[in-house]
Image (cartoon, rainbow, N blue to C red; front, side, top):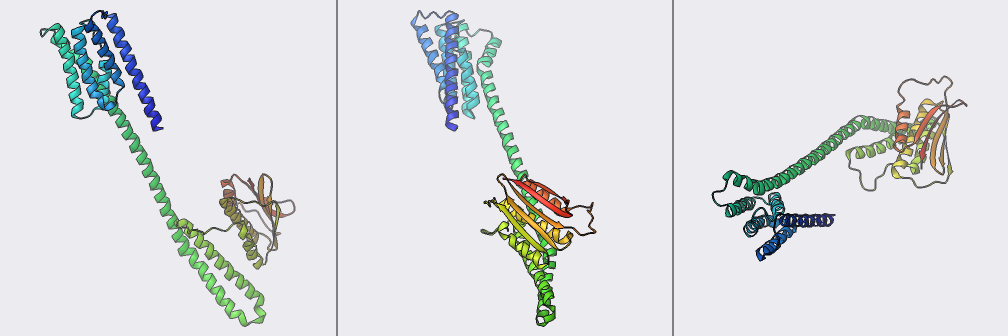
Length: 382
C-alpha cells in the first residue's frame, strides 16, 4: 500500500510539472515570445527544464525554488516584459519549498527566491522603479507561495498530532476500563472466596464428620448415603468455585476447561443422590459444539435440574436433548407440587437461562404445561 501511494504521488507531481510547463510556455508565446532569436529559444528550453524539475525529489524543493528565481531573471532579461517566462513554475516551486523544507534551508530558499524576483524587476525597469510595486511583486511571487506551503504542512502535522492524541486517549480509556473491570472481577472473586468458599468448606467438613460417626450404625445407612451425597456435592461445588475464581482472576491454566455436556451425567448423579428420579433422553445426531455453547448448555441443564429439585414435587425430572438439522433443543419437565403457585418475584434462575440462551441467539421459554408439569426449554440455532 505504501508503494502504491508513493507511485500515485509521483504521477501527480509529474502531472503538475507538465501542466506548469504548458501554462508557462503558452503564456510566454501569447505575450510575445516568438522564438525567433536564440536567447528566446534558450530561455524557453530553460523554462521547460525548470518546470519539469518540479517532479523531482522533495528534498531538492529548496534548490528548485532558487533555480526558478534565477530562471525568472533570465526570462525577464532575454525576453523582456510583458513575458515573464515561468510564473506558474515559480509559484509551485515556492509552495513546495515551504511545504517540504525546514530550518535554515527553508528560510534561505525563500529569501533567495524573493531576491531573484526583485532583481529581475530591477534589471528590467531600473533601480528607480516603483519600490512599493517591487516589494509587492517579491511578496506575491516569492513569499506568499512559500507561506501557503508552510501553512499547509503545519496544519497537516497538527491534525496528525490531534489524531494521534485522540487515539492515545482511546487506548488509555480502554485500558482504564479493562483495569476497572479486572479490579471489579478481583473484588467479586475475593468475596466469593471469603463468603461462599468458607460455608461450603464447613458443610463438607461437617458432612464428613457425620459420615464417620454413623459408619458403625447399621440403622442409619440411608442417612449415611444422604450425608455422603452432601459431602460429594460440597466437594463438587468447591471444584467449580475454584474454576470460576480462576476465570475471574484471569489466570486460567492451560488445559483447564469448564464442564460441558460430557459432564452432564455428574449433574444427574447429584440430583439422584438427593432422591430425585432424573432421566435424560438424547435424540438426533450429536455433533461437536463450540466450547462456549457446550459450557452454556451444561449450565442451563444444571439450572433446570436445580429448579426441579427446589420447586418441583421432589419425585422426578425428565430432560430431553434433541440435535435437529438446524437447531438444538434442550428441555426439562417436572411435576409441580399440588399447592404450587407461580411467584411474581424475580426468577433469577430462569433469567440466567434466558441470558445464556440470548448470547447465542437462542430462545428460552418456561411455564406450566397442560399436563400439570413445569416445562423449561431453550432452542439454539445451529
